[in-house]
Length: 269
Ligand code: SF4
Ligand code: SF4
Ligand code: FES
Image (tube, rainbow, N blue to C red; front, side, top):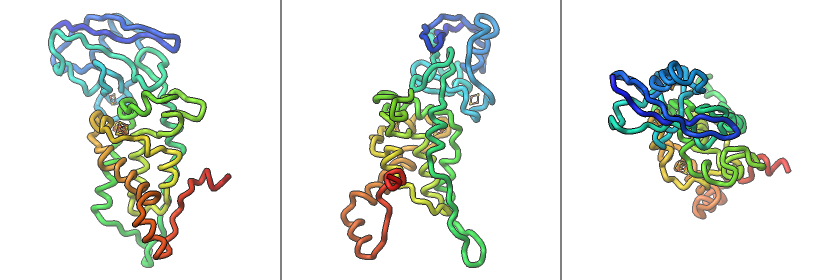
C-alpha cells in the first residue's frame, strides 16, 4: 500500500474548484477504485458515473491529468509515485455535479441521423454480403459511447457554442456532429445492405468539412477504432466525389446517373 495525492474537481453548475485528497492505494488499483475510496472515506457525496468497471459501458469518462480517459481502465501504476493525479469532468459538456456531465447533446445528434434502410432482397429472397464489407463496418460497432472522442475534438470543444447548446443547435455553432457520430454515419453509409443516401446531410447538417483530420479523437478511443482514417476520411471523400470532383460529376452526367445534392431539410423548404 502507498499514499497517493489526488486533486479532484468538485462543484456544480454554479462553479467549483479542485480539492486535495490523500488516498491509500493498493497494488492493481485503477483511478476509479481510488475515487471510490475517496467517496467512502473523505467525501461521501462525491458524484461520479460508473457501471461496469470493465471498460465496456462508457460511463466513467473523465479527464485524468488533462487527458480524456476511462477511469476504470486507468491503472494507478501508470503514474509516477510522487505524481499528483488530477481528475476533472469532461470539458466539452456542461457539468451537473463534480465529475458528472450532461452528455445529452450527443443523444440529440444521434436522433438526427437517418436510420438504416435495408435494400430489397435478392430474387431468391436472400440478402448477400461480402465478408470484407462486414469487416469494414464491424470496427465501428465496437463504440461504447464513452464520448472521449467528442470531448477531445477541438471543433466541439473550442468553437462557438461548443456542445453547450448554442442557439442554432449545438457543436461548432451547430455544424459538426463530432467523431462518434461520424463513425455512426460511416457504419450506415458503408453497410452493404443499406440503401439510404446521407451524403448531402453529412456535408450540411453533420458538418464533415469542419473536421481537419487531426486524429486526436482516434488517439483517445479506448476501443481503438480508427475513427479518422477508416470513418471520417472515407466520408469526406464521398462528399468531395459528390460535390467537387469534376471527373466524377462529368461521368455521372454522361451516364445519366442522378445523385441528390440538396439535404432533405433544403428540399423541404
Ligand atoms: S480528426 Fe476531426 S473529429 Fe477527430 S478530433 Fe480532429 S477535428 Fe475532431
Ligand atoms: S468512438 Fe471510441 S472514443 Fe468515441 S465514443 Fe466510441 S468508443 Fe468512445
Ligand atoms: S465503468 Fe464502464 S467503462 Fe468504466
